[in-house]
Image (cartoon, rainbow, N blue to C red):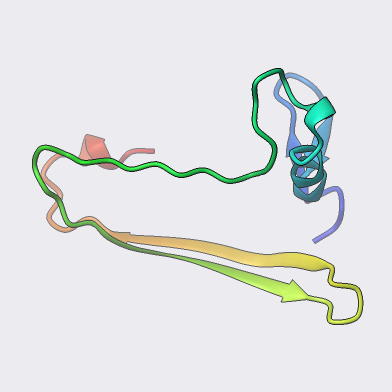
Length: 93
């Protein structure tokens, strides 16, 4: 993947930013909006009233250069088993 391909586009412009640049900026308080914590981490929980049992898997293939520590995402795949589809509209998106 080239540097150009790895850019995250900025809507409405011809500009973009790479994921490593986003991660680096997220750790510099002066580059963040006031009140936003540094880093790229989040914790949340959700407790639905009716239990559900989704089944899925995310796989991220990463290559790490042992000499420089540079990482490159080679692939990312997501698979979900939604079971019996009751309403096809809920699967869109």
